Image (cartoon, rainbow, N blue to C red; front, side, top):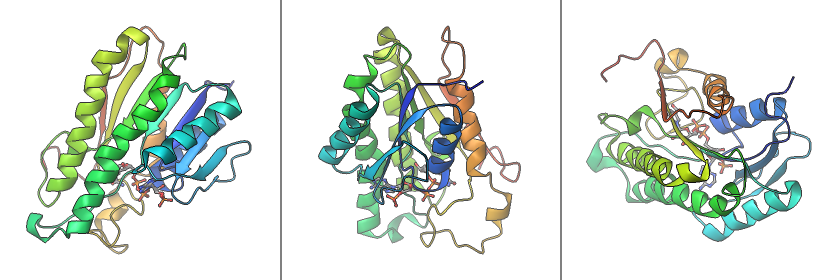
Length: 235
Ligand code: NAP
């Protein structure tokens, strides 16, 4: 039996990596999907609404949300996942990457929620799941601006949990450690770096999101932290 049959979800950053794994996992559970990314990839998911959408652009998000709601008649689940990374010494971070980290991870997350929330409040079982990071729970060296952007996401979702509970909207931060994707490739990660082999798979995060979304509605999970066995607990 499909556990989320008929629900409607919007996933940002759905074209690759963690977002694509979440989208496929939700589709397998009967969720009808809006898939947002700059490339507009539909992942071959039948019936999905996929269109180019840049989370830095509120108008682009409004159009994405409208297309999803028009097709499916509402919106129940928002997965704020689109994000970029860059690792390296603080002063070496190029200005354009600094701007992108803040524009996509911080402002993009805020714009995404603002576009979707008017529809989520009309759902009888609404969910807001943010794919934040371990970097949103602790300061990590050579990730200062990324950490700042992820702390912002964690703060946003925590605050919204307080504000939106009266509307029955469950708000969850999912905070993974290293996941083997294209993330930060060429910006502190390389395809041949040995750490990649020990990282989690995108599907590990997708299964965690599915767990969160399938809890009985008498409770909500505020935060999930998951880390590869190859990572320490303190660094
Ligand atoms: P990824 O493989 O690089 O995928 C990033 C996704 O975001 C792509 O679908 C990309 O699609 C989309 N995207 C990037 N900029 C965008 C923009 N301006 N507007 C719309 N979509 C945009 O990275 P990932 O590892 O799956 O990361 C997904 C999320 O997980 C991020 O928020 C990241 O911070 C978080 N995370 C990752 C890790 C990790 O180790 N990989 C760990 C913890 C948390 P297009 O290029 O088509 O736009």
